[in-house]
Amino acid sequence: MAKPEEDIIDDKPMPLMDHLIELRTRLMWSMGAFVITFIACYHFSGDIYLFLAQPLADVFRENGEARKMIYTSLTEAFFTYMKVAIFGAAFFSFPVVATQLWMFVAPGLYRSEKRAIAPFLVASPILFLAGASVVYYFVIPVAWKFFIGFEIPASGNGLPIELQPKIGEYLDLVMKLILAFGVAFQLPVALSLMAKVGIISSAGLKKFRRYAVIVMTVIAAVLAPPDPGSMIMLAVPLMALYEISIIAARIVEPKPAPAED
Image (cartoon, rainbow, N blue to C red; front, top):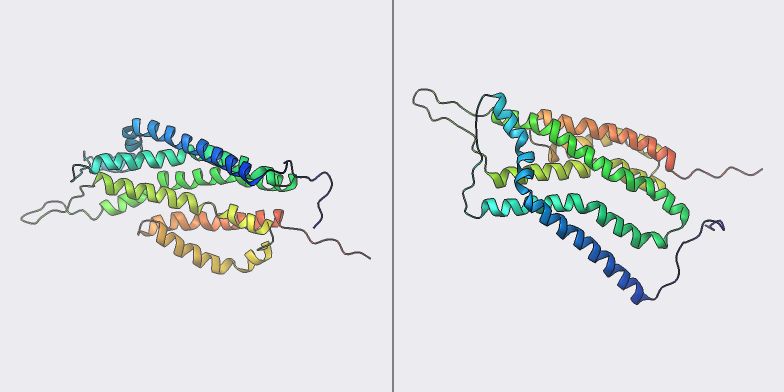
């Protein structure tokens, strides 16, 4: 399809070597941002740990108990803090990495393509934060209460069952849940982009709605902790995001050309 004269590519032809040098520069900036944020996150890894462990501490506090986490290997706490620092560095350095990727790709795009992609670049991190917030403030507290309910207090000659969470296993689970929910909330971005390029349509999404409900229920069962409350808390937002995706797809999908007389 021919482009209007004002819809041009704001770039100049470059030799292959110059493109490779440009790519190396962008990668170095991205790696530098990751290293700097990793050092900062490792310095504050204790504070990040307290933040991630707060939902469990709140559940224990509601039960009137003072619990602690344990680690059973000499190196477990150290490597757990390393994982926390890597997780935090990936989270906080993402804006810089995304910016460098955009600066490398954008010169090869038409102005109309830049205008079309820009809203998705803004919506993606917002939706990721929304997914992370949902799992941290709503799903995790409900899930932890459910799992702690399987404890058996001491009575008579029986042996009690008491939770003694390991720091490594707990933080691995929390970070996986945050990542999984953040990625799951990218559904409107992914579907809208596919509608923008003509792979899918809003009519097709409507027709697929009943199957999408089943698929999202399965996704919620896989990603969320295995209790009904957590699965519902993920499935309902996913269904709402699917409906938002239909509306967004209707807005951005290519419109049919008007018929000529």
